[in-house]
Amino acid sequence: MRLEGKVALISGGARGQGAAEARLFTQEGAAVVIGDILDDDGMKLEAEIRELGGQCTFVHLDVTDADQWETAVSEAVNRYGKLDILVNNAGIGSTNAGGVDAPRIHEAPVEVWDQIMDINGKGVFLGTRAAIGAMREAGGGSIINISSIAGLVGLSPGSGAGAAYASSKGAVRLLTKATAVQYASEGIRCNSVHPGYIDTAMTERMMSMPGMREMRVGSTPLGRIGTVDDIANGVLFLASDEASFMTGSELVIDGGYTAQ
Ligand code: NAP
Image 1 (cartoon, rainbow, N blue to C red):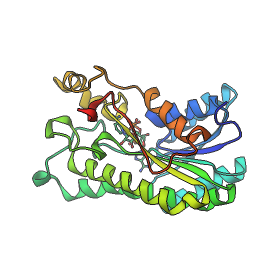
Image 2: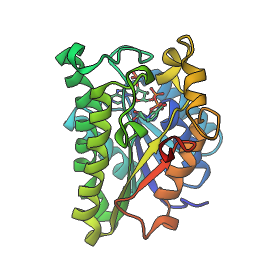
Image 3: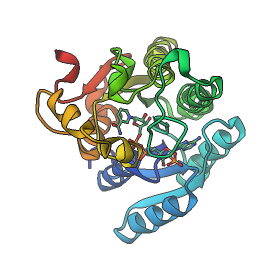
Image 4: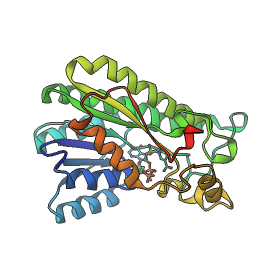
């Protein structure tokens, strides 16, 4: 029960890594509000977790909309009494489902840049902005921002990560440090998580392209693709009081990819 008595809000929590975190957090005693644009998946996950005895509520949340963030934070406070943990997890890899349009800069449409920056970058800013007030009232909190290995190193064109994605994840890395420094004196911690190649819906189409899975496994020293639970375990640690002396740090969970 590492999160006993805590209340968490997870953006993009209807599926993928966010859903794994919602399941794990509730097993560890937290009440969880899942925010996502995928209403059906979100409501199914809410029902699944409640059936197992967990406390969980789904709210519709488009992370690019400041008003919807206010509503999601209010839902956590009104229903469960406070907000202790925010996981800024929602993100897109590209503008088409499954993530295969990762053009190089000279070929990239401006709209692709805008959309990716809006969701992956501005979405984290808006979530943090909305959560600070409630965390102050709770006497502190933990914000975990999901960046990527693409926010640490440049990935080659063949890897499937475009410049907009990398730039958005780099912005998340530094927004994390700005948040950490600005709110440390109020007991609000903020850390970034940097997943390597993980099997989720986001990467499904990319992974099924000829040779892509083999290339990704081959470039990962531990020799496998990561799972959503690999990431959820790290996020759980940062959310819990076990990480009470950690803020502004980068937790890299990539099978050794960026160690090379
Ligand atoms: P996922 O399964 O696609 O989950 C992301 C969730 O965010 C989806 O439910 C997605 O809905 C939702 N979302 C998209 N736009 C949104 C918006 N405007 N408002 C609210 N929710 C929105 O992908 P994942 O792999 O779990 O990704 C989670 C995070 O990890 C992302 O930030 C991603 O960039 C990061 N990451 C992933 C990998 C990887 O290899 N999978 C590696 C490094 C970092 P839709 O399906 O409708 O888009």
